[in-house]
Image 1 (spheres, rainbow, N blue to C red):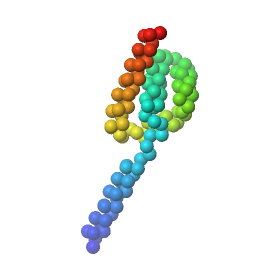
Image 2: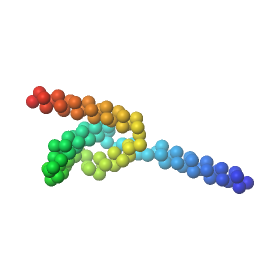
Image 3: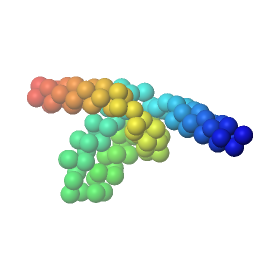
Image 4: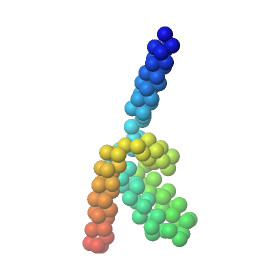
Length: 108
């Protein structure tokens, strides 16, 4: 009887673990928008590396541009951090967006 109870507890633990991991919230910001925000922030961080006040202003403008709060951005990043497929596609899209920004700056 004890063996059955231990197996039931283990089984229940495994089911709860799978449900918890499997039911993690989906990203709250769609990936294409998240990619643009990420790239814009990365560009701003490089541009204003030695100017923290300017960087803060740039980030604020980026979040306003995309109508997103810093908290929502961070929450979305946290909620997607363990999904390898998501991040593989994310960085492919980020590189494409960054390349398009480079091409646009060369035209101007």
